[in-house]
Image (cartoon, rainbow, N blue to C red; front, side, top):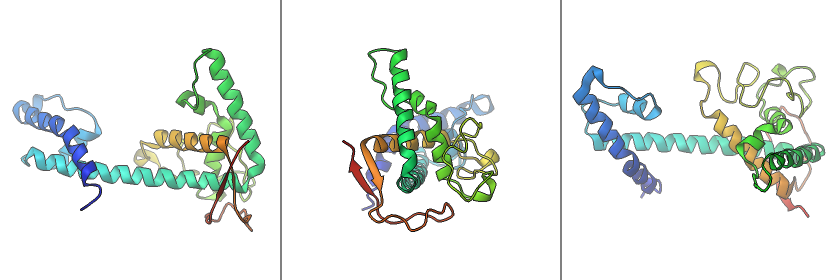
Length: 228
């Protein structure tokens, strides 16, 4: 049995009534129907309008599971690349930790007594972390600017080149109208994951990497040593 089947059933149970309602309204109201502008409607429109609602629901549920799998895989892969960079360039970690402390203190000062942790607002303020992440995820070092062959974690600080900003020099999330619309959430996830791990643990290689070239795809085990 496909282990994803139970998750497909959940998606069908949640989306089924809404899909059936939309299909019914579209048939009854025709061109006068106020068509929703969302991804669910796009998926419905890609299937035959005369298909039974249960079959449409199952097809959409399977498509959603594919998108979820792809998003989890890419987010995990990109998070791993940043963790490797933290291990290979540990000399920059303390500065990232100092930024964490400063930002979290600022958040608490704005609303005393409220524990924010790594909220979306706090993570957005961590500009050095954002620059470190973008540098870690580069695809073509020749487009990164001056001294491209060396890892420069603060290359994009105050340069209006956040990790979510796509362009010819940063193609991790595509470009133009085909740029990944979920990149804002993905970057938020990656920064949160990395922030929590970095705060709790030192990230090191059991055997130091012989090469720290940014041109090479990192591989091998990592060790996470609990901070005191």
